[in-house]
Image 1 (cartoon, rainbow, N blue to C red):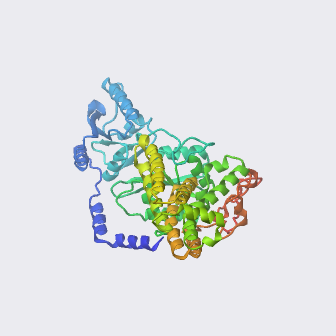
Image 2 (cartoon, rainbow, N blue to C red):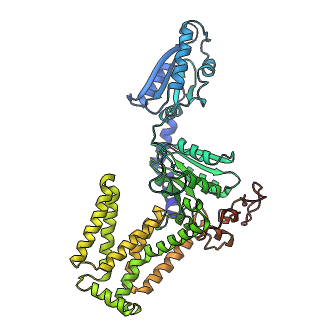
Image 3 (cartoon, one colour):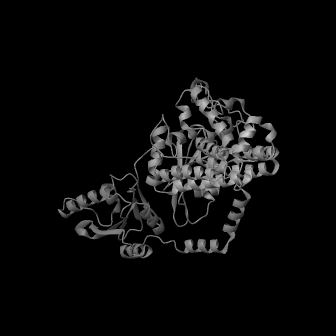
Length: 532
């Protein structure tokens, strides 16, 4: 955990507001009263007489002497499985075909709630209220000191579609949705193993957001699982609206350009990560699933790498690493060569570039920064504009502004080519979070190139590599497979060997079940790190 996170945790745990809030929570803990009217009044008062609160009274028992009430929130509860059996049984009771003893809620639960998957008794009114706000149905009885919570959650969600941010030519066309249970079901469908375990927490004092983390028992490291559990439990914040909240609060280092938590919207990607010994964190209300620990190499890998032939996947990965170099260094190298190192260019090329830059009023660095900023503005405008207009605005804006700037003599044609090539190479990076990191680092590299030339670029590369080697993701080195170097893990780093040769899981995740193919499949072996 970072120093900043430790400081925030210490501050929150010792602040007067935190102590007063804990005291209020203890004082506000109310148990179920035997008086049904008092319980009804408490629920209505706590919800401010909200119009989406539905309350239905009914009578049961001999001669209808037992009063009861059913509560649910309209729009998030499926009441068909509860109200239909209730109306049927009450109709039978009215015809005196069913005789329930007075004050006997056990018979009511056994007869009425058979179609419901989960039924539990709760004595805390706050817990009953929280269950109701989560979509469950609450039933209270007069004279009974507990309430019944019946599972009836039914969230309205969009259909399962392919994520627009992670398209593939070959592979599944399904993605996560905003409903937590739909997402966990998609993973259960991929991995039908009883060792796929899941734990759920409620994080956020106000939002009470369901946050679940899943792992495969026997494959995931118990140390990593415990660390994930502890970090999630230590979060004390009023709201969690997206998985990005969780990512910022659990990452190892805050002040870094590089993401240390992986994310994806594809169930096949998360399933593959679970099978390698990682832990997936799912947040209700968002289709983006987090994965820890993360290493830099996996941000340059795509799910389609494993659905194509090994030779083609290797070729595509090499292209991605080349695109990474172009994205990071192309404008900086242009600035350094034009400003300091013209002698390294062939004479014909140098004369051509000098002729193209004739009349340009700005130095190469200013020219590059202006063009990069203009392109970033156009890119952001294309993302924020309505879909029917965004693509047209970005294409027309790029063509018109670029051509007009060249004709006006504000920039050189070579700079337009460099900026366009850099932008196209940036789109090759599969991970959007790493692509943003490279865009930020590109400006740093341009400043170093304008100050020290190629020596500044080399200095920036050394600092960047040293910084990446110092990063950790839940205790795992960020540059694993490269630094520290693991020969066995090179089969799925830059190269991708055939499937039959990928006999072992990554060693850096400290898997206890290390072998995945062969006669030893399913047998627990000791991993290279020594953990049994």
